Length: 136
Length: 491
Image (cartoon, helix red, strand yellow):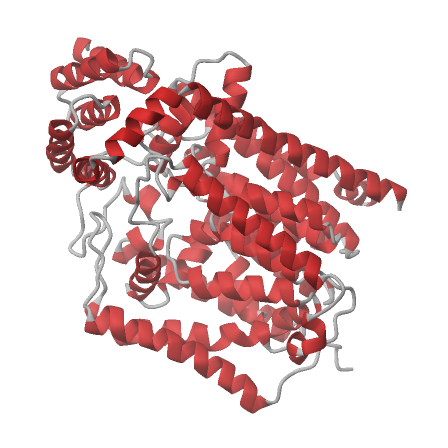
């Protein structure tokens, strides 16, 4: 009986640690990245433009998942027109170009993503992927 | 033989086996080539691993799957590892393998609590782990939240049987941000805790018919509205539209399933008012209220940019379930058999004894199973119900444990599961060159992957897999009947 109670406590302790680990990082990011979050929240004050940007970006992703890469590019370009400072949009554009083997355009798009956010690892990977394929 | 039983009885045997399988799979098995190995949903999770809340992938849908990518993010940060695509994939490989090993560990403890024989434990583990979902898909397409959901659900099973409310509370919080239906599961299990020797009293036939009729009417109204009146159909590339020539057969097929599904609820004792208001009711209610508040506050706090996804929409969930389930006759059953092996065929054949067993396990179990299967059971992307699998296997194992063992029966299960793992078939998603068949499904080599998902199965694959499922069902049925499986032999 005592053993069982101990094992219950061990499970509880493990679950607490497993929950706390990401929660600490999530809270830390909310605090440290407050300025970036404020920018995003400021975008909310212009809800029509932000909503349209999100809709275009999401539509681009939907087309991407459906393997309709040309339509994905079209939607993502619309998103970029609405918000040219979003690194993810350029990265998504790069991914779609990569799928169409349009390496030069992919490189151009990912370079722009990295200009906005030089730490964007996925954009770096996509850029390398395009560069490697172009060299082959 | 005794030493084999000893090994089987060791609680670390199956977890170690899972870890070995994980290592072999990661080293030697095929990997999804799409999107640098991240896949489609995986691409979104990878963005979350890299940027957490600042990622464009965070919306009101992905926020309910944010726990596994956040956990990977935290561990990579602690280890000073750069979150590149390769590192993310490897981290998910480790997370998935550990999740399944932990699930196996707790599942084994549950089997031991119910004194399941070693032979039936082996069958239980074949049903639980040796199928396409766990043995193949997990390693083929690693950046997903399925394995973590499977693990959380298996630990929930253990905690439910041990009446550990605090642990169920913590698991529900983890589950709600891993696999949305785990929230409902956890809340129901906390509200209706496990009781030993739960009374079983069957309803009379009129009330039973009333339950079944209600279930069928609900489904009929949905079909009539969404499919016949609104003309909803599959619009996604590579997903075949509803087969109009077979639409009535499809409707009858799913209505039949919904006729038998409410059998899970046929225990009169579930509805005794006294059983709803016990000493623990208030504690359970408060715990559930706390969970719901935490989740709703955290959900909005995490999705601070308020991005909305169309997946997070009741109508979308209902229509995809319905339209996909109506695409071809019995496509949901075929899909579940293809994905989870013999489990669903066994459930259909042994539905009566299974539901009786569920009645004895209490209303938390029965209500959660019913609601999950009622809402998501028709989804032909069988992944959607991975959280109910440990519970279904456990209930079924109790049924099998009460019957005399039959080696042909066990052999048939093992063979069907080997077949369903598709370890013998190249699943590699080819390229966009495969093309589509005349109904809109991808052809081989793409079909090597998509034949495992009902909504994307080509007509040929549906027919072959339907044939195999029916053949296996007939074999199992006759093995039960002709060998008097579970019945005393006549002299």
